[in-house]
Image (cartoon, rainbow, N blue to C red; front, side, top):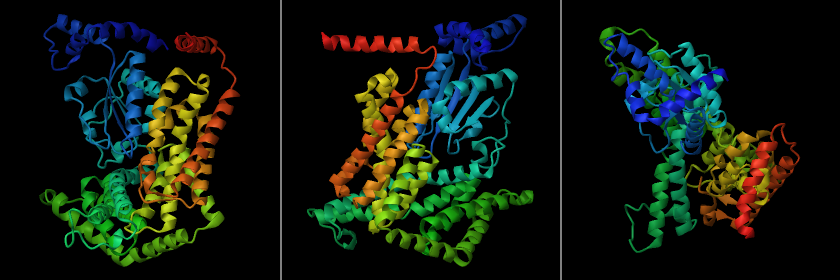
Length: 545
């Protein structure tokens, strides 16, 4: 508290003239010529606000990435701190200007996948956390990094060897690193899943269920026939799906061993497809490839050979080892395990299928886009990542997407029917949650879960479980891995599918309203509730008039 109080007045003074402040703070602009200049520089540094550069990223590079960026920027404004954020999203990223990084006093990394070009930020006080921390407790992160700066703690100027080692604290356990390795692969795989899955689904929607038997469009394509266009979409989608397992394996290996891991990772993933080891084979190939490259990099190499290591020796040796292991040693057992899992899914019916739907619904709503959510989603997409998925796989995909839509839609409905239970900001977030929920972006419920996790998350899980179970019970199917309400025409039994979603949304909404209604006002909250009531009264006055 004393630190925050002491820094409030200088922050206001610095914020009156940010251009002059930036110029005074720039290391390149300050040249110490005598004691007077040095004193002026010190005074200018004391007057300008504390400056932070932040990087945010998540496995899919969509919702969490930008929500964390917004939370950090808002918290910075409240604390009188200049926060510049570089969101590293799925569509690429715009690098922060090097002069901004040079002038920054500290760095915050809020990420679940490796920060790209992290060496740019070396040599400054740093806080390194997961992306959810950037969403849920940005003020704490800002306070923590300011304390590190006050103590003079800085990161080493030399970057560790791998993206995952650069992506967290040195004391991280292998469980945490394993999750980051897998999320690295999943984050690069998801765009292929979305593109390929939607193209295949559109092909079936236009050409019917026999489109997978159509000849190659290279041999037969009629510009005026819808069936030819359907076959074209289907075959393009099939090609996109062919990259799923190699991309997954390649970027798991990349997360472990940086660029040298890409070649053996892609080779191992392609072998997994060749031997019908599928998704499980891709996971194993990626981990093996990354481990092999790390082991090779630890061998002491003569200086004369170091130049050819990255482009010749490492790709050659690692690909040979990974190929041998996948073809001869572990490939067949993994292929048998994949076949067994497929047969188990195909045999699910009745109560077993309903229970699986409920379990997947619980997982989708447990952490709203986090690792557990991604496990359920990846499990579903792996089942349909073939040209002709089974009915069971398509039912699982339908249940997963339906359950994932429940939390944001329920929060949007709750803020509509009982707005007085929510803050003004939450009511505004509720408006956006309608669109996010309809688009199958579960992260739309995160602001509500962050503010009140003990009520929102259990209620969301209950509704998600009901929706998942009903979706399986109604035998709804889905070939597209994403799209939400916009791919309803591609869903089997679409009306019952919407009924399942509506049932879960109503249950979650009712539970949230009841639980929040039972909440006792916190001491000292009377003033805040009075302000909210006044705002509500002002909002209603024009309507009444």
